[in-house]
Length: 365
Image (cartoon, rainbow, N blue to C red; front, side, top):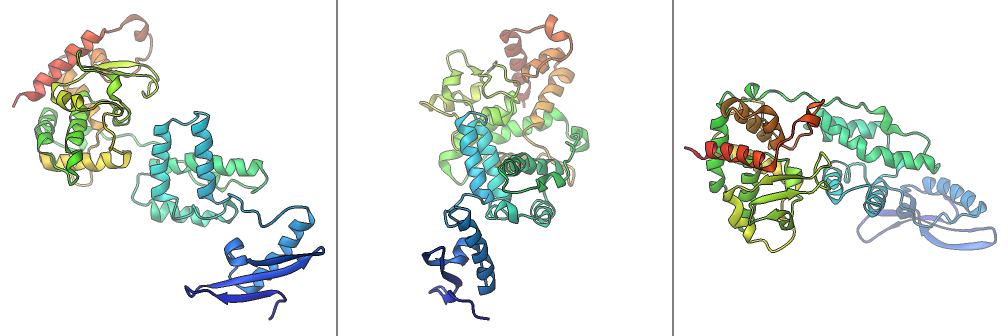
């Protein structure tokens, strides 16, 4: 069936595009590419879309004004707003970007919110993200749900289909003895002596990655916080790091000593981040390579993570070195619970002495 003013054109790349030229309310509109503008694939679809276009014009709206309404557009818009009003820290945006680019951008990101279906979401969960832990899928809801919620408020969509997806409970992390039968001290020592042998393809990253792994191993602080440290946070004369509350999970300042092993690396940094090239997505891969290099034996189907360094440090300090359990916990900058926080506190020197005892122990062959 022929539609007046509507025709199909074959472009140089072989693709078929539907063009529409029409007159409405005494105004003649120039030819428009309805395939590019509205995704029309047939002349019938273009004809039906033309009726919607005329209705929009009759209401005083311009249907040809480009709007930012794909999920990718709206995500970038929301990120810019939240960074500007400081609702998001730069590290939050980095973490969200990593997840978004990996799982969302090329799968459903190009779609308008009104075109995203529950089936799209299920495919994303069950196929694209099939290999990730269920709790990681909750990140998808944290990122995308507010975008749908805002679109509902604006009247652009009428249902937040993200709410139809299940929210997974955070798994209880298995005890270390269920993942490896190696002695905990042996694990730490193997890693310690493997770090100087750790090689990378990009030679300029070698010392940075070795220093990062050494700091993760010897201080057991969260790698997300270590990656935000700058050289300005480091007092090299006192061999001390002063982590500000703006980057800590507890929202409190804390101090911890710098091991001698990374002092030469820190002295080579003039300003800015001490680990400038390390990204969130690369940390686990780097750590898994270190485990293999060190020859740490892990049960089939199990794994150790950088976060497990906290478990190892705490266990070794308390069980093997007989360090007070609250002091060992303080070394990890945990918030103390119950009334003990009101009656017991440790100085930086106490923390430093505990670390020194731990470091001396793992340095021994």
